[in-house]
Image 1 (spheres, rainbow, N blue to C red):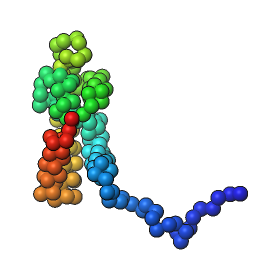
Image 2: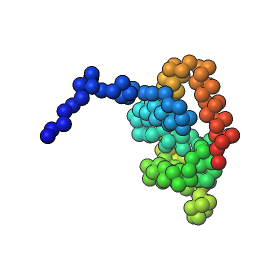
Image 3: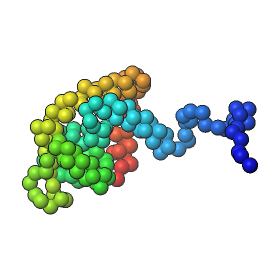
Image 4: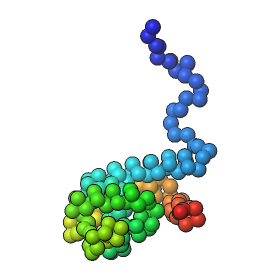
Length: 157
């Protein structure tokens, strides 16, 4: 017996027909981060970067010779994820390890190619920033950024 497709009259009123505000803080933040990630990843695509890669390149530039663990701490990321992501951008020739051979003590530096990629990506990143600010308004965008960082400081591990 073949199953029949439900007609609109048969679809229960509880059917999801778009984003729903969730009662769970985690679910709400995950919804927002998925949307934001799509905006930034889409904007950065012409530069061949994801938002994570862009943030890592920025972190390496802002803290030259930082260790992998220091970068993970600065970005509130899991060190395994940071290690894997740094390896990918190293393979792309955007960063290079400097100093010690011990992976736990490895420090990172941008290559000339990495600096050029950041220069290419910054206007694309700014377009994503502008899109989010336009959607929220400048006051709410600033508040969102401040509240996110407050969570990192007060709840983060």
